[in-house]
Image (tube, rainbow, N blue to C red):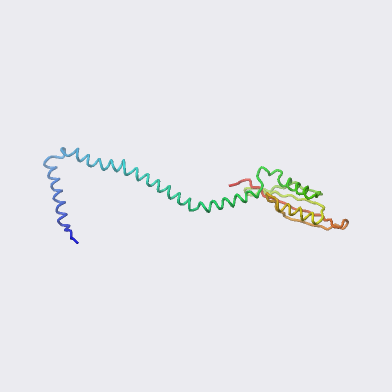
Length: 193
């Protein structure tokens, strides 16, 4: 491997600097002013007009790429959570059905099972964060198989209806007939994501 003698290199650079300064002193700086201005302006212009816009664009693209990587990293999780939320929304009544959903669904179930209610209280709305819990109470006189069919219909209802309570009282005057009070409720989301 060849050794480089840095002292010779430094001497050559010093000689070149002495030659340039002697030429400037001898000929004057006015003669070289246009060349010096051009020699300084061209690299500066290239830096400002070519390098700086490319650097700005590169930093913007780098930022967009970083955002895209982060979004791609969390996209699957977001999609899974969004799908689960949409499944939950599909099981709940729509806000536009708030006025009649629960009472209409209960009436249809009673009619389908051939049950005549002795009393149906109007739905009671309780405001909660982002929605309404709607509940009603129904009293009826039924046989046990009719009661089971009615409850099964309510539990399988889409949108969902929750059975809060079932109170069964045996009547002595009619064999096999029971007085039943049933509490039903549903949740209606007013704000959806």
